[in-house]
View 1 (cartoon, rainbow, N blue to C red):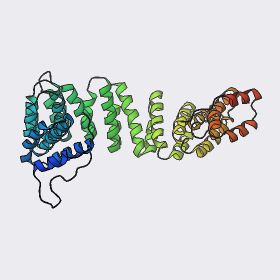
View 2 (view 1 turned 180 degrees about the horizontal axis):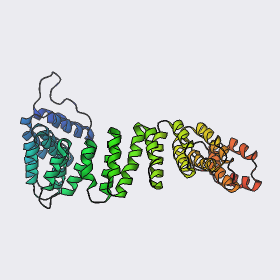
View 3 (view 1 turned 180 degrees about the vertical axis):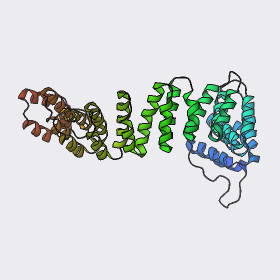
View 4 (view 1 turned 30 degrees about the horizontal axis):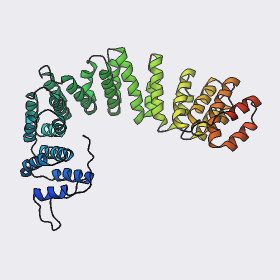
Amino acid sequence: MPLLLIGATAWGADTNGVPQSFTARLKNACAEKKIDDRLNALADLAKGLSLKEIPEALKAADELKQLRERIVLSESTLKRWGELAPADAFARLMEMPEGMAKVESLRSVAPEYARKDIQAAVAAAAKMKPGRSRNEAVPLIAETWAKTDAKAAIKWVNGLPEGFPKDMALHDIYFIWVHADPAGASSTIQNLPAGDTKNALLMNVAGDWVVRDASNAVKWAQSLPLETDKALALAIIAESWADVDPLAAAEFAIKLSPPDLKERAVRSALERWATQDPERAWAWIEKLPEENLKESSAARVLNIYAPVSPETAGRWVDQLPTGALRESAIGSYVEAVSPWAPDAGARLAIKTVDPVVREQRVEECFGPWLASDPSSAKLWLKNSNFSDETKNRWLSQPPAQSL
């Protein structure tokens, strides 16, 4: 039952600074008129419980009239017990019947237990009966252990009997490990069975490792035995590397092969570069020798930068020499700016060489322009060279909906 809890208030003392008994504090919490205030007060009361007050609070929770009050005080008290004495709290939870209350409390108690005494926690988890609670507790304990010793956590999970949530626990361990130590996790990850999980982990290893040690990350990726794994890792390396050194990432990407991998990596690096220094990214694109790669790369940069700065991006495109790149870039520019600056898009779209494509691009911008600034849009259209039939058709169309 999702219940919103706000910040703690001091329920442990009266206005004179004299410590109040648990009974008095509970009475104050239950006296709140608004239900949200009352539930928050009960949760805050639990946050300040001493170890001696835990049994009293659990008993009191069972005696509250409303279900929501019982749930909040009980779960909050068990959470507090987990902070103070997690082994005892965990043992108490094991005595509870299966249900939401047990599972919700385990989510806070199990990690605390694992942090305080991992060996005792794993031993206790191994003795749990099958059910939702065990399926929750084992991955939580494994995940906590993985933050300090992933290999030991993996060994423990692999040694559990059949029927335990081993796959779920291993999944959690791997994703913690690849972020904490991508180099250490790399050999294990590359030997996992093919599938979405392996692909996601390879991406995490590549992305995290290249930021720390680009040279060794690249060597690892290039040594992967499966071509699909290699291509995935190299593309992610180019993308993540661009966050810290976009020029180096782009220069790395342009040397990759086969062509489809190179194009993917270059585009990914340029997308990241465009969010940092779009002008340098654009200048680098103009020096590319391959026209197809130039066009797709320019589209990526324009898609990011043109909505932010339509005038500057439009000037870049307009200054391109006549040819395929300019025509393609005009189209990318129009697509990027039509929702935000349709007037700028129309003024550049009209410079498209192909008359059919020119009319399509102008129409894409004219509708939003007419909706946002009809007087200037109509004046511009009146002075354009489009046929009267085309002009009347555009003017008669329903106004475009703005984003």
